[in-house]
Amino acid sequence: MVRSRKEKRSWMAMLAEQGVRERISRFRPEALVLLDYLETRIHPYEDQGWTVFNDWLDDCYAKLRRKDWPQDIPFVQLNTMRTIVFPACA
Image 1 (tube, rainbow, N blue to C red):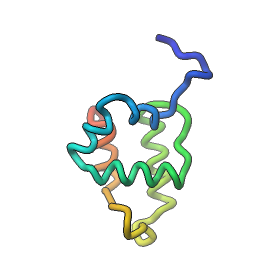
Image 2 (cartoon, rainbow, N blue to C red):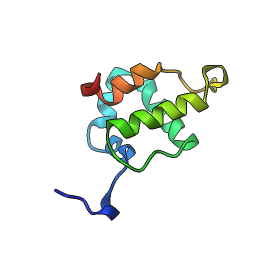
Image 3 (cartoon, one colour):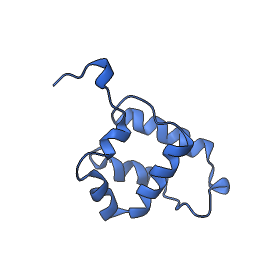
Image 4 (cartoon, one colour):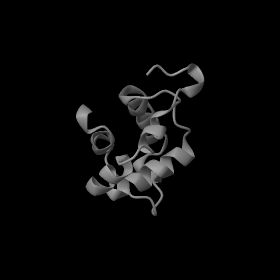
């Protein structure tokens, strides 16, 4: 199915698909907390896929350095986040 430009979804919409959040939660529930937090701080890029997610995640971690990490938000290593969200790309 080819999507029109108006129907284009970000990779964040992929997380809302059935079973995705549950899969992530089985491996690292704190990863969902972190993704939800990062989404409120840095707007997700509009395109979908591994490269877009990877670029956005790099940007998030660069802007929010470990020393400035909020105490109530769990820290998950950058490469671990990549593997959890897109396990096929590990």
